[in-house]
Image (cartoon, rainbow, N blue to C red; front, side):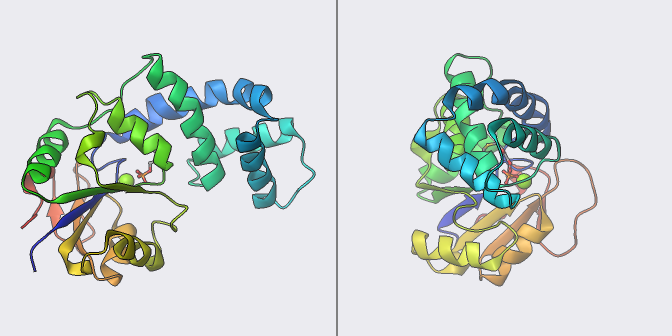
Amino acid sequence: MGIAAVLTDIEGTTSDISFVKNVLFPYAAEHLPAFVREHADDPQVKHQLMLVAGEIGWVEADTETLIGVLLRWIEDDRKVTPLKTLQGMIWDVGYRQGDFTGHLYTDAHDYLQRWHQAGIELYVFSSGSVPAQKLLFGFSDFGDLTPLFSGYFDTTTGAKRERVAYQRIQAEIDLPAPCILFLSDIAEELDAARAAGMKTCELRRDGQPASGRHPVATDFTEVPCK
Ligand SMILES: CSCCC(=O)C(=O)COP(=O)(O)O
Ligand SMILES: [Mg+2]
C-alpha cells in the first residue's frame, strides 16, 4: 500500500530543537507571568489555570502559585496540555509582532511542498497546541505554509507515546493506517504509531545513534515516502 498521508512531528523533525528550546520556551517564560496576571479572568485562561490546579491536585491554588508551577514546567519541558495551550497564546503575540519566525529546515520545506503537490495529504502531530502549530507554520521562515496542511493534532487527542492517539488520528484522517507515514525523532512515539498500524520513519538530524526499531532518515530527502 502506498503512502497517501504524512503525519509529522515538529520539534526535531521539521524544526530545530534549539529554536524551541532557545527561542520559544524562553519567550514563553519571560512573558507568562504578566500574561497570566493580565488575563486571569479571561474565561479561556481561567479554564487552563483550573486544569493546572487539577494537575497538581490543589484546586484552591492562587494565581502566583500557578505561575510558579507553569514556569517550572517550562524549565522541565513538560508536555502538559494546559501549559502548551497557554504557551500558544503567548507565542501568538510574538509571531504577530515579528519577534521571531517559525524555524523549518529547508529540506522539510522542500519536501512538504513536493509531497503536497504530489497529492499526499499532510498532517501535524505535536505536543505544541494546534494554535501554536498553526502559528509556527503560518509565520514560518518560508512564509505561510498552512495551505499545505489538511489537519493538525495535539495532546488533546492523546499522548504522543500512546497507541490510542494514533488510532484516533487514523480515524480522523480516514485512510487505512498503513497508508499513513509518521515522522518523528522520538522512537517511543514511532513505536506507538506503528502499534496503530502506521508506517514510520525516525529522523536523526542530530547524528545520535538511531533506535534500530524504525527506518531512519537524516533529513526529509531520505524519507521513504512511496
Ligand atoms: C508547535 S509549538 C512548539 C513546539 C512545542 O511546544 C513542543 O512541545 C514540541 O513538541 P513536539 O511534540 O513537536 O516534539
Ligand atoms: Mg519531536
